[in-house]
Image (tube, rainbow over all chains, first blue to last red; front, top):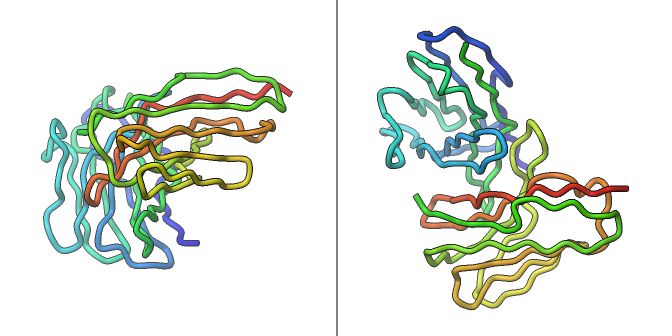
Length: 115
Length: 109
């Protein structure tokens, strides 16, 4: 099956710094990717839809300037958490649709801890 | 975003027991999906439902798409220890997927 990877798998950073998370579709192309955020023992919350070659679409309440998304190629989307604060600590998961109507392949997630 | 509520929030069962969980929404979805997530990993698709009233099985798992298109349930028969994890329902709205609040399942050997 299709594989989506994320890098890094975990990151610890100081408050005020920026962190970039990569999401790659390894054996298929993805014009669209999705970014989710998951707090401990909670559900996945859709943050934004990343569109190759155009601007990302953000869900209501998600700050565009805080969470910068770049979808520069058909296999790579990046999420940059700018000026990170402790409340940004979370599990960030990306996904990419497959060829089937309801196929959506999830990455393994990135655990972000902001000190 | 869309709001999907799952119940129960958590379950502790003995190995071999059957499990039932459900998901309700205030919105209508054209597709319902059930995922399983293990700690530190992304969700994995278990079952996809495409039509109201549809009943679909995948091994020991059975799921149904509610007639109103606002609910779905998932049953797991004869649970085993590896069924442990968090189960999420998800509704498809356009090109986006919205997830339920999750049901944490613990199976006691």
